Length: 163
Image 1 (cartoon, helix red, strand yellow):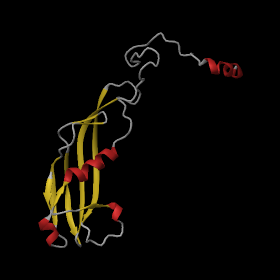
Image 2 (cartoon, rainbow, N blue to C red; image 1 turned 180 degrees about the vertical axis):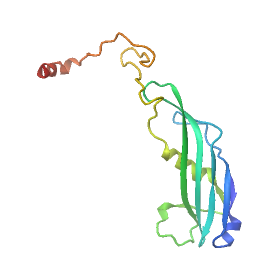
Image 3 (cartoon, rainbow, N blue to C red; image 1 turned 180 degrees about the horizontal axis):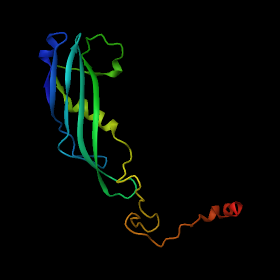
Image 4 (cartoon, rainbow, N blue to C red; image 1 turned 120 degrees about the horizontal axis):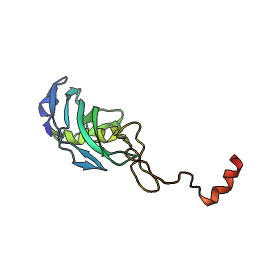
């Protein structure tokens, strides 16, 4: 979503309410985002520097880290970003998104915050048993006859120390 900030930049203290849907990639690193990713927030001019505050919400599907079944997840991400052009007096340039022209692509402002908020692992349920390492059976649905006491032959001598 492209937002024209020309009117806000004219007046110090000007503020605009923003809301809409995000045009996100459908899939990113195994995470499948649903189409209903939305955001709402404000864009405020503070002495020529724009402050964007918003909340992005949506749903996505991701494989369970243990059993690989697809699981539905919800996210709600707070976004606070500062946008400024090269002329603005900012003490920390690394924390500022460069503003060129009078249009801001809100997807490029919000999308990185969504990616950073995602966990590295999701489970279908807290007590997911996962897959058997030997035969690949889903241990949530069945039991298998695989031996659990398989010991690497190089470490077999250590077992004698425990008995």
